[in-house]
Image 1 (cartoon, rainbow, N blue to C red):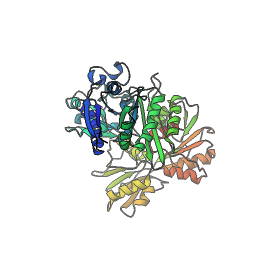
Image 2 (image 1 turned 120 degrees about the vertical axis):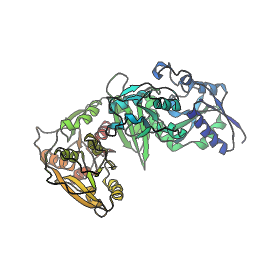
Image 3 (image 1 turned 90 degrees about the vertical axis):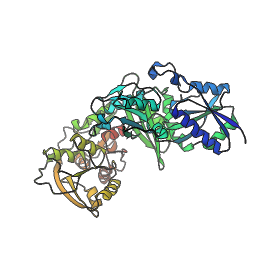
Length: 518
């Protein structure tokens, strides 16, 4: 088949990369390809924030008009810029592979603070034109100053280099595709399950006329059906919320083996609190419908968490935004155990937030030149609050992977574990053949008295000792049960509770995401 295909593209470096990528794919199939540059309203109006430009699709409308007029045959879009409904007569004939869909935070060196969330100093100015990025950034760091940022990717990076901002947020996909020289800027990649991207971020959409059946069959040869399965769920939520790219909505759906996992975040335009959730299952369309229902509804359920109220502040804030009532009561009392002497070691390995707190409650310092390991991101964050940047952070909730990765680093060394008196020693038992394990007890626990009988729809347990003390005092929970990690889940199962829900990570935010997705 010999047919010349005219691709329409915006004129930015990134848009041309995308058009040329598509051109190369089609040329490999034997077609003659030409690229025609078309300016859009979003390209022409650079002095206004996006929310001041009227209408939707201000990066796509002129391309779609050219398609309808027959001036071009194929429009290549960043899928996240497209309205969820194509104009009459047009259709999405295919989608590309998915580039890294995370966000990248670019930071000037003088604005870095390794001990803060996102490694940004207090009160830093962050450039972004996205309401979604703004709402999530302020959720994690309310002290930051969010400043509007316009221009193509190289222009935005140059504005940061020139000192107009302390940091800027950009899609990782664009940075990866353009391979820009960042001139000494620090790049922090934000995981898409923590900082949730726009629906279909990192994916290209190939748009054609509905009547051009021949071209639709050609494009089908470069279509990625597996990508469409995931982003279809993401864009379904966007469509049902009647949102364009201005809606402060993040949705990320990924496939893990035979399961799909979906995260969503929303800052409602009525000014009500920022909301997030996590949900998993076999069917991405079902997940999208369930997530949409949860985002739009107010829960009327009670949640119990085995934390003291001051320890559960973030969790309570997040689930309360979705309407849940929270009761935080710790079934265990903790007592610091004084350390008489700190043994020599090459590594200190902290396995929980509580071991961090009880170690530093004794006004102890870490020995000079010691390397520090943290079980997961929550423990790492606790260490940062004490001015410690961990040298190793394990996989949240996965002691097996954490022990395997740490063993490679710690071969032939001595590793000291600050522990609870009743510690399960999950990591120690797995690394003992590779390293010399030492321990110091920093706290012990005892069952606490409950003020009353606990009754809830959802129970969240944060340690094996909390499980055992709660059931001893209160009996088995009768609602849905969430365990912070695998060892806590095993403690519940040992008590005869078979159905236990595990969050994807052992953080307060992940616990809250999981509750809000039920």
